[in-house]
Length: 248
Image (cartoon, rainbow, N blue to C red; front, top):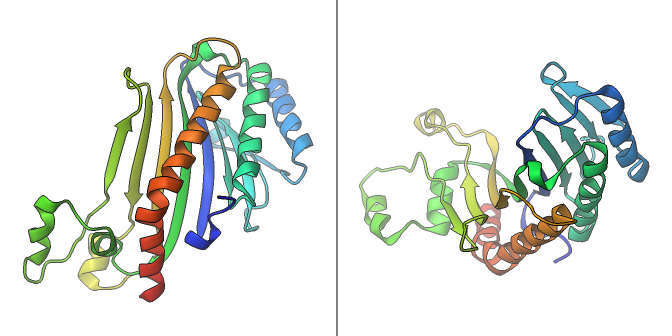
């Protein structure tokens, strides 16, 4: 699928590399890395720091509907593409990050704690998020009768399932839903416009042996994530949520 714009308000594909040792913090090293990325994506012109300089960020203008971002922290490299024009555009962006990071940041497969690819989908909804998720997606059979308790309202329901996809449990895929309705909102029956998020996170733990393992691992995580989205999450979660919100 080229894009998921018709299924949600916003979607994004994020990459995170967690390291065992601290990443380089030298000015010249970081400048060279970010300049290499900006050369390929000239619109990424916002360059700043957060958390007292411990996080360095380069990004597009976030006022645009579609934008990219990149950050380097003490032991984490992160990047994201929000509302990409195509899935392949996001793939190319993340591949470029991992093609350059080993050279500029001395990133090594030996130093890798985990690599994540997160595919996220946001829905803006003014109402009880938890009740909506329970109504649309259902609850486990053992809990169904609880919903029949008179005057009961669902105040917390965030389904989560994590699967190990190899024998050593190094490759895992997690699907979870994050709601933002609080008890206060339910008690007052005053619901702000907030986002319900659906996340598909594929993670590879531990050492990445061999050459070009970052790119190979990235391709594996991207393939696993998109297959999970297209074959399971889109028809069973995203489409029902989109239809229900449109009708309410």
